[in-house]
Length: 165
Ligand SMILES: C[S@@+](CC[C@H](N)C(=O)[O-])C[C@H]1O[C@@H](n2cnc3c(N)ncnc32)[C@H](O)[C@@H]1O
Image (cartoon, rainbow, N blue to C red; front, side, top):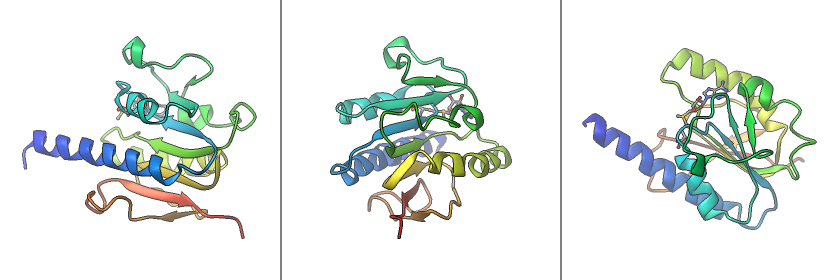
């Protein structure tokens, strides 16, 4: 498979997962968290398909086109490890969806980032919230879901925050 094929598959999986997750949380109130603005592609897709939801975007180095850059207070700058902390009083609601597109291509660093931010992110989610990620997480409060049928296993990680018992 060429690198172009691989990139197309990755982007198709991302789009399928985002649209599937938005449908899954349709009946639940809550904001959306976007971790990793990058070029703003997935942020733009989220706001197009969830126009009624507030979307908070976390990014340490915002550099997307201004059309795809949220304004304050929806852009939260800094390293996720710090910027996700203490957001609970700032968000108008708990989050119903977190989309984490945070990979740098350095697997050790990415794995450590997921370990560091999992518990902090969990505090911002309501029960039943969906987490989509390009990185694997191991958060005890989350269960892994298979995600949409057309996305091959392991291409994108899908979790749901368990309901408290
Ligand atoms: C793969 S890109 C996101 C692409 C984006 N979803 C899009 O569709 O254009 C990952 C982004 O995460 C950001 N990022 C990675 N690690 C971070 C960290 N520890 N704190 C804050 N931002 C981080 C990078 O700066 C980069 O912009």
